[in-house]
Structures are given as structure tokens and as C-alpha cells.
Length: 129
Image (cartoon, rainbow, N blue to C red):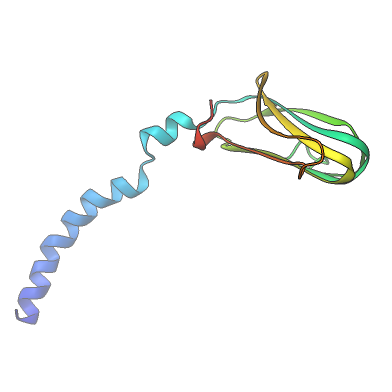
């Protein structure tokens, strides 16, 4: 095929591919949109005793509470989660025999028993509410 005919062929094919592929790449799938949580109330809990060096939550709490330092255990934080948040997590470092729990709208969605890693994660896209 000559260089000129190759360019003409590409000029016809590329717009067709772009017109069909771009919407597939840009538009979220219906199943992903259905699994994205609505706003709700979340309670992060860290069990155990002693003092945690740090506690982090995701999404972070109100300004000034992104990372908490030297926290007496047990600890509990309640927040309102905005719509579209797909993951919740709480991580505690330190303390004696720590554990954690995430409660979303009154339902326990993630839990690590005392003595575990004290790192709880809830992923709404992997079978959440």
C-alpha cells in the first residue's frame, strides 16, 4: 500500500475508532456508579488500652483532625461521609493490644480483633452497601 493510500485509510479509520472508544473510556460503568456510596454516618473505633502514637482516618476528619497524636485508647470518632467516597479506613499505631472497627450507618463493615494490625479498610466498590 502506498504512503498516500495509507494516510487516506487512517483518515477514515481513526475518527470511527475515536467516536466509539472515547465514550467507553470516559463514561463510568453503571455498576461502578451503583456501588458508589451515598453520604452516610461513619464511626471509626480503635480498641485496646494505653496510648496510640497516631490514629489516621480516611477520609480525614474535620480540619485539625487529619492525624491524631498521643491518643488514649479506646478511641471513637464519628463523621459524616460525603457522597462518592468509595473507601473508608482507620489505622492506629501503638497502644496495647489494639483493634479497630468501622461502622457505617449502624452496620459494622470492617473489623480487626484486638491484637491484630489495627488497620481496618472498607471498600464500597468491592461489594459494599
